[in-house]
Length: 301
Image (cartoon, rainbow, N blue to C red):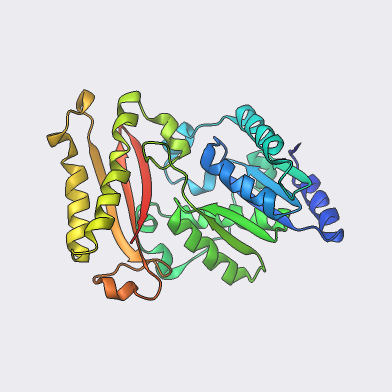
């Protein structure tokens, strides 16, 4: 693994790789790596000749300054994790080279805060979009720049950020880049909690409660066999909102559901009837506050 700090150095490296006919994979991250990220990197190593892993906390996708300030930054640990993974899969991996791109904000945005703005129509008008104005445009700006620098054949994203994948798919259609978008399954802790960098901010007591989110979603998937869409949605929200009333939760902790939507798996538009998602399938997407930390998860129906 080689660490690269400068955009020009990354561009030079991938240009050489392209000239040699190598396949390039990109794994964009904001660092604070966990097993979910590592699963993306491992898959990319097995499917490409050169893998670029970016570790960059992108300030323009945060519409909450406090959230940006609290976002965990563990660059040295991240690099060690990547090195260890590279050694672990070396015998079975296709990739001959792994680059860890760790730019500063000034390196990514040398002209100051970018002026470009992206719009994604109905895909961004639901769930996260109205609640985090400007977030997806900020994501698109940094991902577009990473695409330009890394020139990947494939880009790997985790399905926990399900709406983000739809946004990136739309972005690729807009800019007409021939990049294969590779969605990868959620990696969960043994107790079912979806792995997330934000989990680091949970108190021990909140961390014990958090798996109830996934447990509730799994029960919702079973209910979908015999309940209507609206009834499943209402049950999920009510169950989490009243969780502290029927369980012994420490320090007055409680879940504060922000939304739970059941949507078409491709268009991300809310459905009222299961038949509406017959072609693409349905996905339940949830955002819940717990102990001052915003957690998201999905369930496939």
